[in-house]
Amino acid sequence: MMYSDKVWDHFSNPRNVGEIADADGVGEVGNATCGDIMKIYLKIDKDIITDVKFKTFGCGAAIATSSMATEMIKGKPVSEALKLTNKAVVEALDGLPPVKVHCSVLAEQAIKQALADYYRRNGIDPTPIIGELPDPEACHVH
Ligand code: FES
Image 1: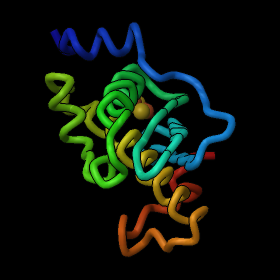
Image 2 (image 1 turned 90 degrees about the vertical axis):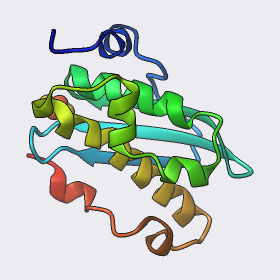
Image 3 (image 1 turned 45 degrees about the vertical axis):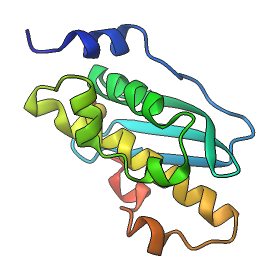
């Protein structure tokens, strides 16, 4: 079996799908490998991520990893969400086939972009906190 039960579960019944109209941070990234797109919306109150939603034009692995990633940062402080790695998400899903690991990077990058957007909206330069992020437009395959 290529996919774990957890991957199937999050793919068949993804958590936190949708958008947040009055989000405090929005991140969008494209996957340079396949051209798929991920969008993450964050609601942040006093440094706590109170709500998170995602939308994707992505494959099953992208859906499952985003679903798991959103569950992992919901209710957590921003500082913890910043530390979320795609590796941790893949581990929480009991693994992904190696050819699909690139899909899990979408969620991590979109969360970082959304947090960068949140900092910018609050007049804070996100680069020293988050580091250089890939230009979201540069990743898009047109
Ligand atoms: Fe594009 Fe998985 S194949 S995100």
